[in-house]
Image 1 (cartoon, rainbow, N blue to C red):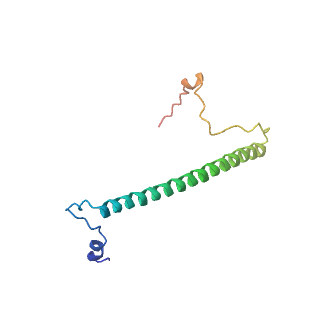
Image 2 (tube, rainbow, N blue to C red; image 1 turned 90 degrees about the vertical axis):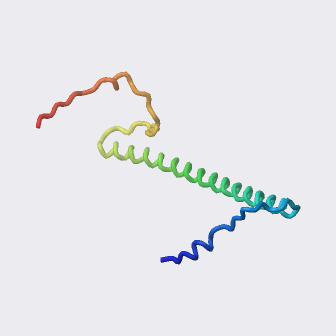
Image 3 (spheres, one colour; image 1 turned 60 degrees about the horizontal axis):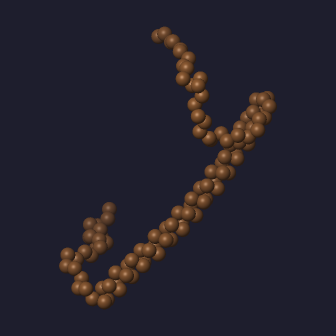
Length: 106
């Protein structure tokens, strides 16, 4: 188990007294802002890279799904149809408003 003193030592030092308005304090604030800006820009670049990687993987998965569906159709002995976008949202048809009733007795 960790000692409690190590947790206390890692806390940031917060001062309730405002720093005096000096040139050095202003440069320190500017430096902090510049460092945060660079960090956030780096995060944006890494997020863009990650987004591109995910998009590429989704495209690969989509093509694999289409090929696997075609393989299943050939194994069933059905003619292979043209590949379609299986993940598209299709609008509901008029017949979707009808329900088939099933009664089961216990």
